[in-house]
Every structure is written in C-alpha cells, then in structure tokens.
Amino acid sequence: MNKITLVLFLALIITFSAKAQVLTVGENGSVEVKSGATLNAGGLEISPDADYTIAGANSIEKALTAISIDGLESMARHYEAAEDLTGFTGTIVYNYEDADMNGIDHFAALQILDTSDGSWMNYADEDSADYTVTHAFADAVQIKAVTANDATLSIETVEGNMSISIYPNPTAAILNVKFDKDLELTIYNLLGQQVLNSNSKTLDISGLNDGTYILVAKNLENNTTTNFKIIKE
Image (cartoon, rainbow, N blue to C red; front, side, top):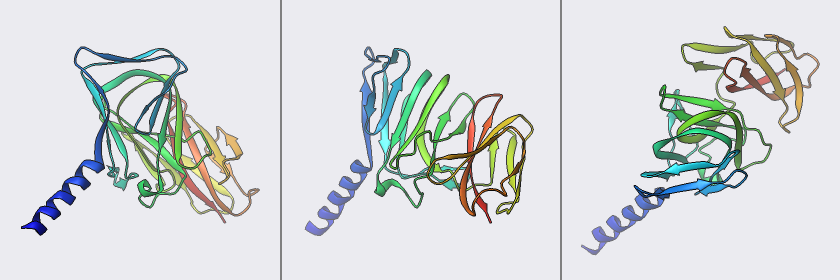
C-alpha cells in the first residue's frame, strides 16, 4: 500500500512539474506591457514595440514536452495561450535549457502557431547566443503557441500549398533554390557571420570554405523566413 501511494505521488510530481500556468489574467482583468518593457512568462520574453494589453480571461501555459511540426519534434518546451495574442509587434525571446533541447542543437528557429490559418510559421533566430531564440516582428502577428525546432533538419519546408526546395545539398559549387515567389537568401557560417546575400535562386558557393552553413530564405511577399542547413563540400 505504501509503495503504490509513493508511485502515485511521484507521478503527480512529474505531471505538475511538466506543465504550469506562467501567466493568468482574470476575466475582468488585464496586463499591460509598456513599449520597451519585457514580460517574462516562465522563460518566454514578450517585449512589444508599442504598449500591448493582454485582456482576460486569458492565460499562458508552459509545458515541458515536445510538439510534432511537419513530422519533426520541437524542443521539449512549448508555450500556449488560452486565447490568441493578436496584433503583436515587437520581440519574442524563447529561452531554453539543456534539458529542453530534445536532440536539437543551438541553431534553432522560432515556431509560432497562428490559428487564423492553423499553420506553424518558422522564424529565423536573430541572435547568435546559445539558449535563446529571438525574433523581432515588425508586422503584426497572431500567437497561439510558441516553441523552437531544429533549423537545420529539413531541406523542404511547406508554406501554405507551396514548398521551398534546396538542391543539391551537399554541393561543391552551385546551390539551387526552387520557390514560386521572390526570395532574399542569406547564408551564415556557424559563428553567425553573414557570408553571402542574394536575391538570385542560383547561388555560387564555390568560394566558401568546406563545412556547414545556415541558409535563411526570406519570402519577400510576407516577410516569413525559413532556415536550412547546407553543406559545402
């Protein structure tokens, strides 16, 4: 009897520690985050560039579990709002720890679920620091959930009914990018330094040293970004 009770008690501890509300706004309440200020909701930093109000009833929950996005697992940490955070402009910083990484390295991308169309959108990390994934939104976004996944795993990412294809990869010289709309393509080395920027969908990387790089493809129609790992042979 004592042994069973102990097992159940431990299970409850694990359940509660893996999921927690990190922000709660009552039905008639609100939280206003001033421009330039930061709201830290259990490691999710929300820094608006204009005064931003989260009205009740609403909450943000942190769960220490992974999410499957397009067949790939995210880091074992995600945040979900009970009601969408609408019209947000500013900076989101996703903080993570070693225990959250779930086999993903530090070259992660921010993933945001927009329930207006039910899609997860991929946003490039704009800082070079480990243990944070940062993106600044100049255009308003609608946020239901936030996590991070490996920016280097996929060579094809679905965006709506279209896909971005990168080939051949690895390559010794020419890298082709197939997409129906205009793109800005930027290549970074693993130190986060920009080594190439172009609007051409045929990239000559023969002048780069052999190794691994991150290609950031920016859709110039809607300013969304997608990251790829490329290998120069």
